Image (cartoon, rainbow, N blue to C red):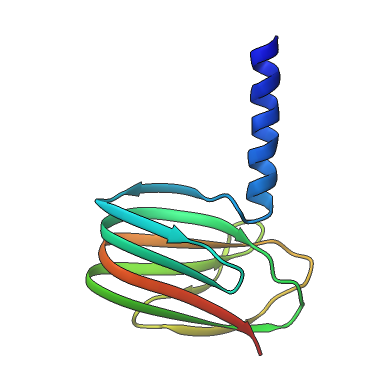
Length: 130
């Protein structure tokens, strides 16, 4: 009975961290992978990385936001998608389409999903209210 109790407690803690945007779900195969989510920017440094990362993001105001994706990749591709609470894509950014603007609702949940295809280099996603 005691081990089950701790599984439930740790599961609850991980769920709360994920809901606050502090925990990340991922499926990655890489030689080097460093991902740092933030309040106004996400950063990634990678070497031969393939897979995906998803985390929740909170936007505290119901306003329009501008997203800017910057990538210094020596090979491969990276794409970032903004998803709604049902995980449907609202905005996709990559090297060919690096900026986008979208009006977001105050009380809704949003997710950022990064997809890597044999990518090597550094990339960053910034967002700000406009």
